Length: 470
Image 1 (spheres, rainbow, N blue to C red):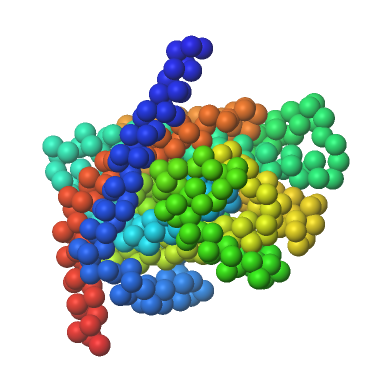
Image 2: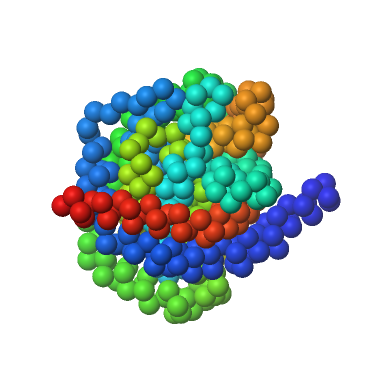
């Protein structure tokens, strides 16, 4: 146990600091600015075009060829892995651990994250390939090894290993644990839940969720795409609607909430009181960390889903990256943050909350029982969709490392871990999963910067031809 605790302490301590403070932070901001300049500010100059050609086509009937999914199924599969606990629990943790100003850094990371994710998807389409079954496969491990050459395959292997490990942590155990926690919380709002009933609920939820994941996961990417295509828009609309109602009910607090965010972005000590111990380092790190956890820009994971899209070209699909980050972070995370701050609920600064902050905020308008029930359902759907998205990412990484024969083994383990995640106390999982997320970003950023010229060429060719046609 001492050895295990030492390993976990290293993963959540020094290695975590290296992955986030000294690697991800400069790469996310400075690297994002570099990619923005290299691509002519594509996320700003062509934002309208991106929205028109993504959300504008959401309700058009689309079909995909063999071994592929539609562009919208690709984006909802990617969103399924991002829209979830990161938007609800992650945003709450950013505020509690980094102060109100962490929201500012979350926004900043999202603005440059748009072009980062755009670049990932462009490269994923450009360097994808057909596997033995005829399916399109791609992502950082492919554009690193194919774009940079065979001598760089070791870097692609590192990415695949870290992504596989992350799929068990942030993509599985922490998600299903959030589901069981929210369900038990909802039960507690209506009746007393004894230790025995709580244990039984955890096992029941574990078995049910494992069976559901098995049915969908074993059906392949087309089944995952078909499920997420229906689930993501449905649950996102309802969550957005209810948060807007709460913000509207406390509309007079909006200027004050925005003032708190901007005034404490660089001077978190201005919060005072219980938050006096929050440093600028905490504010920046937690804003960036939870932005990445929410929209995954820089991690390279979403590119794995987009690589399977039946699309006209790299930039056509890359535009969905801009759309994803905008919806996931600028819209949904912002609504979560404003709902919490405007409602005036007490925030325990310096602690890592679960769903209790957003539940308390919704309760100011809808009452405690309804809020607990709604958040339980929302978190269950959000987190379940995240598990589906990450099951695909882990499958593709294992396939890259060991071939098709290893995929069934991974899938069985992944399904079993669902049960483990539901019944285990997982306070350490968030830190460890954060570390593997940060480590994933290192090889991905190297690939992005080295291949930035290829992205710029595709961008120039696409928008140059478009301008000439007009």
